[in-house]
Image (tube, rainbow, N blue to C red; front, top):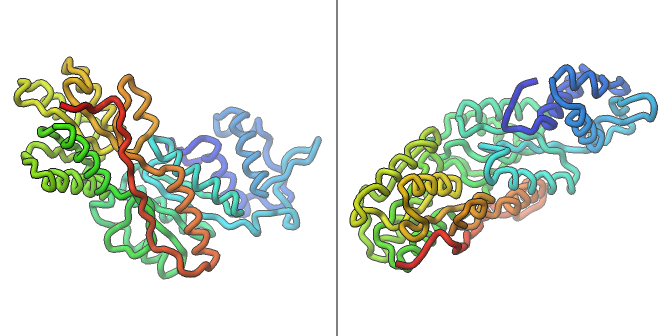
Length: 364
C-alpha cells in the first residue's frame, strides 16, 4: 500500500482494497481477510480496518454475514455497479482549509449516489501528474481538480487534453490554469486583497507590507488587489512593501523578512501586514513576539480564508472569508449536473469574500 501521509489511514486502506476488487484479485463471493490479518499486514489498528470495512460495505463493495465473516458483494447485491466515481485532486487534504472542502464535496457526492476517489499533490507538479495518471486509470465519471502551482504554467497539459479527448467532465477549484477552458469555482482573490488593504488604509495605515505566495494564481490576484487599493487611495507603495515567496520558502522567507522589518527603528517600521493567508499570518505572529512587539498595538495583521487558525491564537485575526465547505458542495453539484446532462450550466462561480474585523487590526 502506497503511503500517502496526506490521506487518513482508513482511506489509504480503502483505496488499496478497491484496487484488489477492481483488478479481480478478489472476486464476488470471496471471503475477505479478517480485520486482524489486514491490521497485521498494514501495521494499523483494527479500529481503522473496521472503519474501512464499514465504508466499503456502505458503498456496496462488501457484505457482512453473521457468524461467517465479510465477503465481496455478489453481483445482484453489489450496489457499486450503479454507483459512479468522481475523483478529487487537491494540493493538500488534511491541512488548513482543505478538509472542509473535501467534506463538503464528499457529502454531496454521497447524497447523490456517487463515490469519491481522493488524491493530493502537495503543490508539486510531478505529483499532480501522478495523481492525474492514477485517476485516469480508474473508471471515473468526472474530476474536481485544484491546479498545482497555477501561476507557473501547466506542464501536465497533455493529461488535461486527454481528459477533453475522452470527454471526461472536469472542473477546477480555487483557480484555473490560464490556457484551460473548463468550468471553475473560486474566490474573488483580487477583491479580497483589495478589501484587506483598503481596511488598513481607512484606519490610518500608510506603511503596509504585503506577503504573497506567487507560485499560485491566488497569491498573484491577492497582490493585484493589494496594489490596486494603494493606487485607488493614492497611498504610495514602496518597492520593499511587497514580499514574494514560493511554496518551498513559506516556512522561512516571510518570517525572516518580517522579523528584519520589525526590528528596525520605530520610524522605519511598517504599521501593518497583509498576509497571503491565515497560516502565514499565524507564522508572522511568532515573528512579532520574537521582536518583542504587540499585535495590534505595534503592528496590525490581516489574514485570508477565515480558517480555524484565525481564532485559535491569543490574538483573533482580522481576515477575509473563504467558502470552504460551500465551495466543495458547489463543485460536486456542478460536476454531477454536468455528468447527468443538465443544460445551460454556468461555466464559473465566484464567491465574494467578506472582511471579518477582529482583534489583530487597529486604527492609528
